[in-house]
Image (cartoon, rainbow, N blue to C red; front, side, top):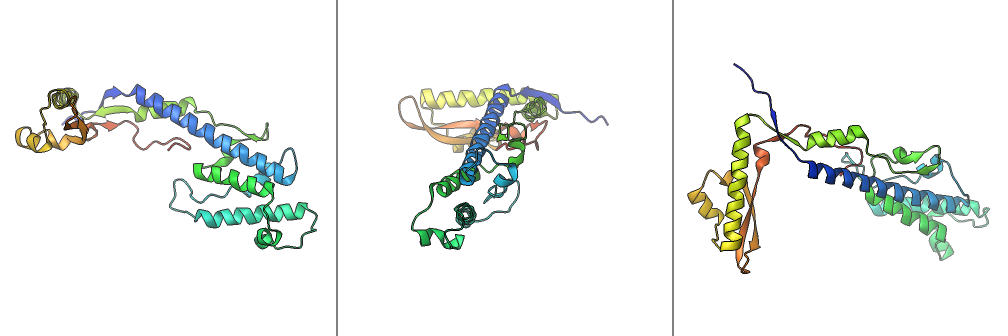
Length: 247
């Protein structure tokens, strides 16, 4: 018995382009937030530059991407603030004999350097990068965006390459798409009010492959728009792939 190999049905280039651009933007935002944190740490240390280990102590996250671990953000914010206060008190030369944990209450104010660091940490924490070290440039001693490599772009394209198990499914999918388009045209422009109940009665073979939402016809009347759930008829060539820091 011959086993048919999956064949390519379509390559979703527009989707690939959108996902690559979204990944580039996410990495840019991560680098920007990390760089703001680096600058905040520099201000806290009263230096123009600091090595990565001095920043790393503040790279604690309330959520770790890809895992079920999480720590309540308020508790972690307090920890970050206490660490920053401890450094600030130390750099003040020890003139304030205060436990960092109670420094804010004892002093009656929060130094700008501490506030700035906590705010910068919160921005990084919300983005939740998987590995901040990958953004660090040893040469520049700064955080830089991680480029989307050619290999990553190829893997994303493969993820958006849709395969069918049998060649004849290609024609079936195309036919179903055309039928769904016609149903939507009838509902939106001709007020046919083709409901899911009517489809179940007249075209039951379509129902398992459709989802729908309420919308308005061209005349402003309530009607339905249908979407073909063609994922049940095809599969990605690279379904499990996720690039670094991709959402």
